[in-house]
Length: 209
Image (cartoon, rainbow, N blue to C red; front, side, top):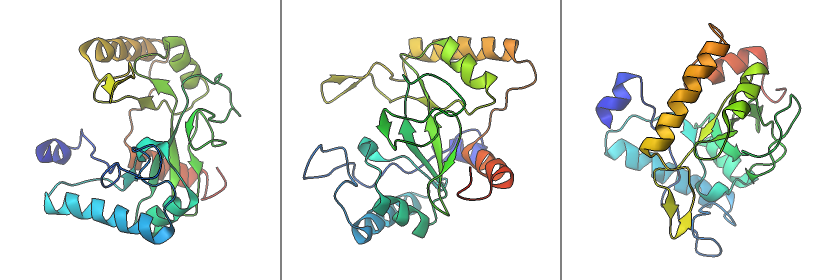
């Protein structure tokens, strides 16, 4: 994993500290926690990466989609600048459409959104197992950001997710991307989080995009 991250073609990001929260759904680690608790867990997660000598980006993906104001504050304080905090594979693709399914709601579906002075939300709007090519093509036609949402496995604690990184799903993604490149020749940009952050920061200063 270290070699992959150092290659520049693979980005490791933080996904919480222990993925556990004792009061409600176990995966919503940061729900019902105050600023101090959120900051402590975020810093512990960064420490794990440091001890393992794994380079990671200042990007955070919230466990169980539990994104609170307390967590957003903690992320900014701990030096995170990107949050993959919203997912919506169902709402219609449109310029002003907002995300309404999982995680942050009211942020833009097809474009990044500032959620604090320091943190930019990167939307996930295309589900690896369920979204159609037409949805991907519609986002590209808007000049938007196609954020692919998936899990490592198709099942999670007995729940069928359907968007695991399986051979079939990855092949479907590959076919979709090739067709996207054909339809939008020379207009597709494969960018990492920091490239999007730098572009968006220049085009839309903080809290205005």
